[in-house]
Image (cartoon, rainbow, N blue to C red; front, side, top):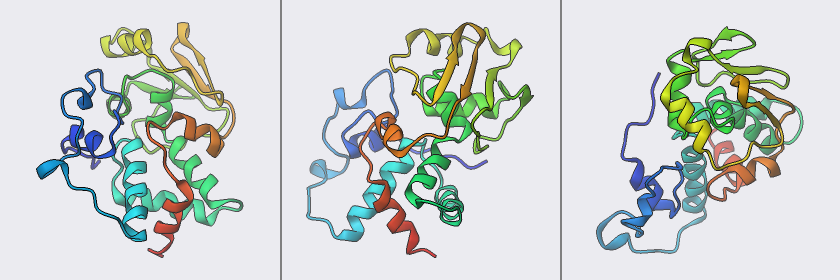
Length: 208
């Protein structure tokens, strides 16, 4: 499965935030944006502002590929109700992201690895597809043989963030559950940088 392999620190510097939650904050060494002379600031067009919001959202979810983001939007647009709410729900309920929110991994990239390497069970069955859509009531557990993996233990011991209210974590049993579908205002509290979700939807709508 395709995934981002480029320099992550440049992304963090571009948005001025430790967007991937790295232990060594890249902004401590270089706080200025990437590029010659710190990429001089210019007034951006509406298109440029929309593009920035889309890029921030992709970064928040582990540098999603464009195809994955667009697919999530199309699926959200076909559902009844508010498209922005449906869209962020589909992203937030990706299996890799739920694993990250449950503090089984220190970063979204670590969560992607756990899923891809078969360490994660959904309702007792192995799922190694990162984009798997977790629905309310589904139980996420670490496979029995994987519960001594150092990266998982370190993540659970050192994680600073609290579990979102739409998730339930049973730390002692390496188990978590999605209680209800996350609401857009709840998700915004979890994102490392502010993202205007309706603006991203407007940008992606022009692709139809």
